[in-house]
Length: 361
Image (tube, rainbow, N blue to C red):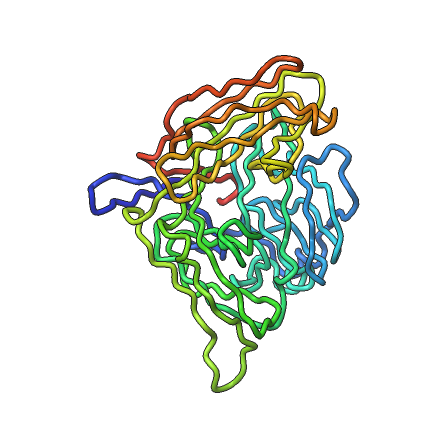
């Protein structure tokens, strides 16, 4: 599934086409489930021993999880209110590797409406990338502020998928909007101080084979707004992100950490563990990808990093200070007892932004 957007400079951008808020076409009978079918759906709530996806449900309602569009065929399980669930989604996706949109809906809403539920009923949406031949732990946190009585409308006037973060540019994820998705109602807990909403645009980088982020040039572009409880005579506030690809900048470098020891370890920035693109901090033997934030600059010298093999921070292997450039991929190889060097790899594929999602039709 690919859609192309032509920017003012004439560069064709294959946009990240996801349907976070429902479908742009009417579902077929095969792709939809009636309310009666949804009410009878057999949903598993216990941990899957072989599950690589861990979902933290921080809201106060049980949720049903879907790998792709919302129907009985795409159910990958449920997670109780305030609980954590390990999910095996491999049987729900036929491709050996790929990307899908994880959707979470309140159990009561799905069993009452089936595939006829609307965009407003989707509590959370987020992108999951996987590889069955090289499975890696994936962690998804469904924010505790979701599912409340207060409402905000979010508009995405861009041709890319829009991930919304709150409180700070690298803050917790709220949800994900589809390209050009408008009038997306997000229900949240009421906060008299409001929230700051920050945009993060996502695309698939073929050079590093991972999902990469694009942010607005100025991180001050976060929009403060207070969601309100809908009532007569009061308009629901609107957050409108209308940046164009020509006005965006990706102040990140991708760091591919390859652990060639027989121990898991942690990438440290100072004394803090960094989180990789799968939402975890530990690197088992193998490779994980991290985004290095270059603080709005085209290049930045970053030092103070190390790799901790669980032998104590004093024995962590230091990573030399390095001049990183935005949009490039870098690799470090961890070998116990040997020094670490940083190697610059290819430049990220930013001429075409594209992603193919499974289970969307």
